[in-house]
Image (cartoon, rainbow, N blue to C red; front, side, top):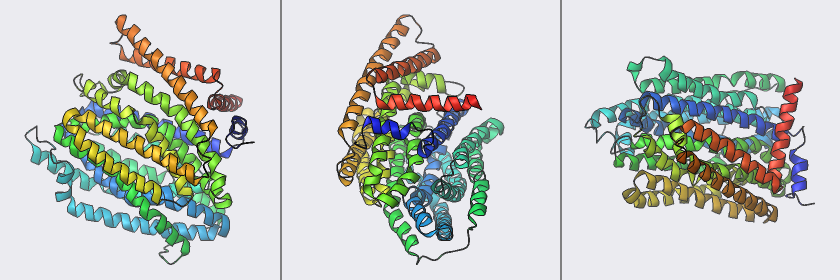
Length: 543
């Protein structure tokens, strides 16, 4: 029987003892909770600051600290550390695994502190290069730029905290401990929200900075009990080990080198948005960021959660069985991601006005900003499915020890985004920047999938995957037509002004129609999804 057949998929995924599916559900729920809090965070920021030029300064200040974290801790955790750590734990035992973890953690921390210190000293000339038009329209460019530089320096504390926290997450995930790492982003977002709500309004966007720093600390502290438990049970320990001569350490360094470039490319895409957005005019950076945050809600739930949950198991399979052992899991994960992300992309495109108006149009975020964010979200939503699928497909390369291919494509995508952004920002302004990023993501996703298909013996894109994707597209298109018809009816009945009603009816109605069509077409992903939900609800009721 084919590994990719529907019967095989149901047999593998509907078992109540499936560790991977349990992890997917837990991490999926945590990502959903984190994204809900992230949406609440976005709502609070919009309510408190609108699309002010001061908020532009905050978004600019976030770029360099994020880059510092992704260059070191992000690269180590995502593609290099977990596969090597999982293999060492399996082959050589606890003592060797903890020694490896200690060495990597120590050097990541040292590197992050050194890089943060360098950025701190050079902030005076780097930050103005990121957003040369920041504050120009308001006539207070020097003041706003000074604010952005100051906020950048303060925020550099967060990547240091996240470097340690990210490594702890990697250790715990590799040991199949998901609960406390799943809670940590919830606490980060909660602190982010409470900062501007509880602190004096006179602080302005500095309240957001305090929330970020506090959230970074909580992200780290919540994982310490789980790490302590793992240390006690295993009889291991972390220490001041710094040897770079160990073979596994050299392998981590070899794997993380190319990945650093890939993650830098992803961050540069956001810097490109910031750079060109600042040239369009004041508030443009905030408009782009609000639309991006709305886009990241479904990407996080449908792409990142599944990719995070399956990655440790993929690493174990690759270590024990080679490329053939990971084919079925990557294929299944890709099908599920597309099953969820394609209709989400169409739904967000059609309901974008109601989404922005319902979630953001409060307080300092006035009605004039709504169509601006909505227009940008239109073009971002085109690439939603690609952003989600990249999270899955890239992991397939990582567990095979190939970080160069996804990195090369990430850099190529970045270069394409820069070229398209420069070409489209003139005629389309902010919408052109969003379209450029979507086109780049679709191109990167397509090439990643084709190349991984070849690496996995041309088994990834099977007839089952094609058939499943075709059913997904058909159901999503019909769903989209019905949502469009619903919007027309509501407009004719003068209900369009009730954005919350339009949004609820569109999401619920569209979801029901899509699921019903998928079941009618006997789409396996829909059947498995219902089985898993029924299983979770049944266990919850029994308790």
